[in-house]
Amino acid sequence: MAASQQRLFVALWPDAQTREQIAAVQKQVMTRAGLLDGAVAFDNLHLTLLFLGNVASADIARLQNHLSRVASMPFHLMLDRWGQFSKPGILWIGPQQTPAPLQQLHGDVAAACRDVVSVRESRYIPHVTLFRKLQQLPPVDAFEPVAWLVDRFVLVASNTRPQGAQYRVLQEFLF
Ligand code: 2AM
Image 1 (cartoon, helix red, strand yellow):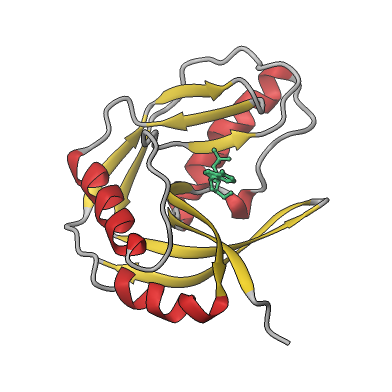
Image 2 (cartoon, rainbow, N blue to C red):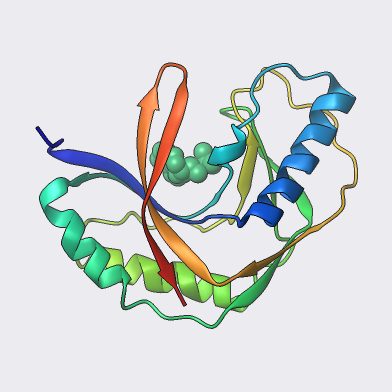
């Protein structure tokens, strides 16, 4: 029987080369700080555009339809700064300056989703989480900025399990 609802989010999903570069930054911290736990799994690395939470399965096709109307030009995104959310021990990398097309895309995705599901307003901080649930945030060094050519976004279903989240890309939306 199909689940009556799914936990969803909209994200930028790194291409293979960008994913490797992000993972290299993650590895650099692990090696230097001797971290054993908390690293986000390689396949799960992503940048959230909008977290939707639980969405009724019956609404997903309509959501996909609305998202397919979101347009953008491809744009460059430079991941060149560290950031942290100290409460859940999150360490991330993100852009020093949010490119205008990314801010626009976030707004357009939110507007498209709002027609179908309720979307909470909060300040958008674009980031790729590298580590979660760290007891102590490790010292971080300068890193080789990751240059990402963004030409699509994805709708993702998240299955939270005790051994970690499992993500499944439901649809890719090319610009
Ligand atoms: P995070 O990387 O900072 O944890 C899937 O859970 C994605 O949605 C993650 O990238 C997560 O961001 C993001 N997200 C945003 N708000 C969330 C929330 N309230 N609960 C869970 N994930 C959230």
